[in-house]
Image (cartoon, rainbow, N blue to C red):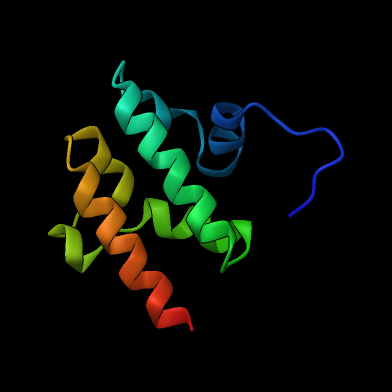
Length: 91
C-alpha cells in the first residue's frame, strides 16, 4: 500500500496493533524487526485490519499464543513460519 507520508515502521506497527503489544516486545530489537518483517509479508496479501487481527489473535501453530506474544517470548522463527502458512492459505 502506498503512503504519501510513510510512518516510521515501529509507529506503523503501533498504529495497527496498539502500544501495549509492541511494548511487550521489550528491548528485543530482533523481536521488533521480525514483527515488522511479518507485517510487511502480511500486507502483501491481506489488508491492514486483517494483518492486525492475525498478529493479535491466538494461533494454533503457536500453541495458542498470538504472534506478538510468541515474538515477545523469543520464538521469532515460529512466527515467521506461522505467517508463511497463513499466507499460503490465503492464495
